[in-house]
Length: 165
Length: 175
Image (cartoon, rainbow over all chains, first blue to last red; front, side, top):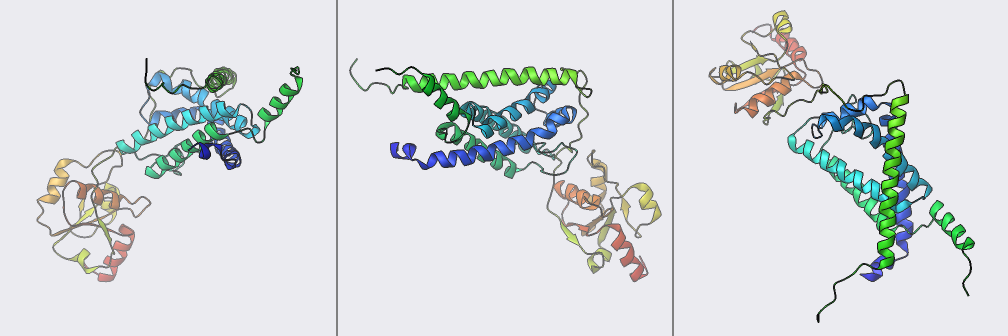
């Protein structure tokens, strides 16, 4: 088991997963930031949250997606970004599962607002979100700063640290 | 105490985990501040707390049964033991309908009234063929599924809806 965790290939796979997740989240946050009213309606359509939580979530969530996406893309505080993504993906998966279980005939609202008939929710949507959740967990566990700001900053810090003899 | 020592998280890992959680919370707080500020400053900003309910339009899940399409020129459509059901609006039904067809306009928001279902059930027909506007989605197919889901057997819907049915009726010259 230890050999599995120590495998060097994880660094490459984690970086690929990191960039893939970054692209997804940067793409997903765009329409939500541009039109918070439509996104609030998307959240309300799930009929899960109480009314007073709908708008705060619509206002804050897209920026968390943007920040997490940028952090993963730049390799800055990668594990924190992966943790945020895993949390969001878990939340989305639960929300979509409830909507599917209720039999609601609606769009996901993930990459476009409800006004679009694209991306209707189904068990496929849940599987897709679960796979992204697993990828986020994978990045959280296995990212070893192969490329990005974390590595750059780590080198500078090490160079600036006084040498102990 | 003798025995196996509980597995402990290495202090370095614990420290790293704490730092990660702290970073994530800081990002969350920063995003909340940026989001709230942006929303307050932008022209299309929304109220932080919504006062009135959102008007959402999600079709409620109605019981849906299995049904199959049937071609308008299929002899079974025109069989005397077939009950034709028109799912289109009353105005469209008024404009043209095959002789004997009953009108049950399909409503995407409201379920079909129980008395209408009873009307079909008590018709004594051996087959129910529903036709709608032929759109996407087709009101005929939707109504057929709903009726089938309410226990009516042998329900079909005309593929393409009323237009091919009207054409087939014209070719048959009767009914």
